[in-house]
Image 1: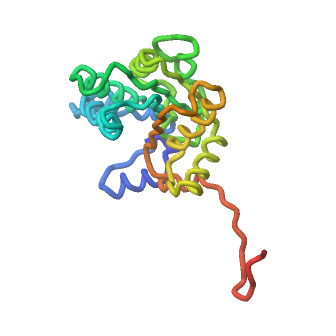
Image 2 (image 1 turned 180 degrees about the vertical axis):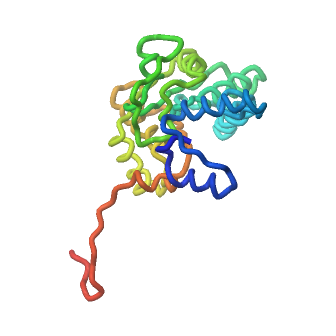
Image 3 (image 1 turned 90 degrees about the vertical axis):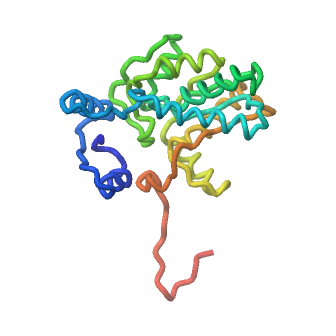
Length: 246
């Protein structure tokens, strides 16, 4: 794993029996090390888009969204995008449902949400390119979307283009405020990546790209419990004999 991987996933891996190595670099660098080991030892490469099973699993999100909407589709789906497999899978699943005749011709507008500190897909979309360029010095508290160059970037961009979608960035301060808002108002402790979709929705509503009467789906990709270091809280100390301040 990259050396800045959150402590809890690191601990989970090691506790589960993995031999854990921390790479002085990014997830891309960790992937290159694994790639060399695959070639040298003949291991099975289970990394992103190197095998079919993750896409086939991710596309069930598209199936479930359609099913829960009564075999209709929402107007907009927002997904936190690092490697982009989620958007690729949802798009694949919905296209398959169209081919089967289970849903109509309408396709949701897919939105790729990235952190301002690592936004290669957004930059490529703004420049109308088919592929992204490597994002130098990427940095965001949302570790899951800190991917400077996604292997399947061209597939993400295709899904966004073909659905008349959007690609948008969110700052770390914004997504942390959204995370706190979801916890206090909805009782859901989502990960920073998932919270980014709420920030993006608010922005696109203000800009008028999303309409108030449209059906919107925000995808959360994990629990906030795995990112305790991301939460900053203010606490006061009380002695047993003290009363709560009013």
